[in-house]
Length: 151
Image (tube, rainbow, N blue to C red):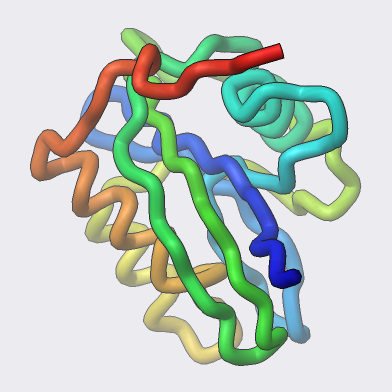
């Protein structure tokens, strides 16, 4: 039986800038949304909030679901279901990553993000990073009660 990996990501937006986290992957500085894998005994929303805190130091609840993506990562030959949530902040918050894999968190405009990933030693973690921002900017979203937890 095949089981895809479940990940959650958060598009954090404030005053025209988006919050990205930088990590080193395959020898390159890589940008991603605050994101990670679902852990045992947590809901998808709990996992998204946990990952946001671990990777940025920001404690917040998700506000809406942007989209659910299914993606096959060609390099690792791994399948993912990625739940992308949105969080709109009134002010930029100071970030303090608690995850040792995160080198720093950056507030960037979409143009600054594109400039960053255009550098030879830098890239985006996967194509879903920019796609999630574009979908957010198009206004795509769904209420959180679309997700239900049954026990």
